[in-house]
Image 1 (cartoon, one colour):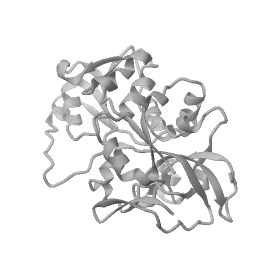
Image 2 (cartoon, helix red, strand yellow):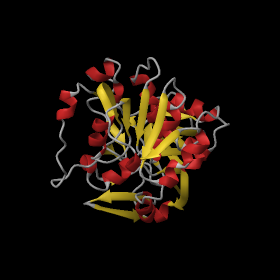
Image 3 (tube, one colour):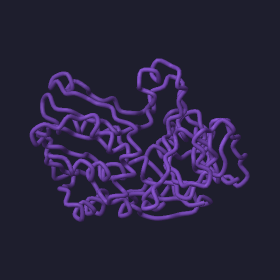
Image 4 (cartoon, one colour):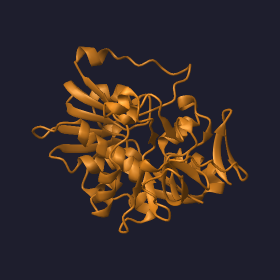
Length: 324
């Protein structure tokens, strides 16, 4: 089968990659749309030390189910949670399964991803896509769920000032979701053409170069995908404010150290934020509460995946989709 593989420090397209073995509790999925994420780009810089088929954003059709699968979704369109858990460790038993001690993560940690003709996930990870949500929308379920996770982690009181820092794929989704709160929300970035998307959503936006670091924001959400994002966020947030971190980046020997003293001096709370509720994300798209299609920059074939990854890393791209 064809697949996009990162191995030995190199990304390559393979037309004859081995097909995955189907576990007894798994589903074999044929992806119809795949989305390139900043995490995929970071993996190709060494993030998580991953080796194998990359990719974790998808919508697809279940081709076959394992012998022990109870919720057989064969023939159905699905999206899926990327964390595959043991169900037995203290985290799983304590209601924190996404932090399972022995988890594998689709295309990120110890499990081949979705940038292939087929891949597997535990059937319990899958969500059937409603008929009213087409593939162009459904492929955004995983990143939109990550944006929705913020709402579970923050308590909004009064009418706080919130800055979404970063105008990339995730930043623009977070800006849309948070603009529906009882808050004053703005999106700050470096790319005028991306910030212009905020116009149609009624979201305030400004170029980073025009924003002073005055320490006056109640909450800053770092979606920059850059190691410099936290430093900028610390300059924007008020004393005893909150920084919510969505950024994951590869760390190298030449990475610049970050001065964390402002966190102590200004008693800033830092909250890590990762995956989120798939059902809520699907509902938001089904009811038209979030515009995801405007984020699509280009569509490319999986066979052109290496070039697609290069273009996705460029300043002009928001979301690049792959098709088989």
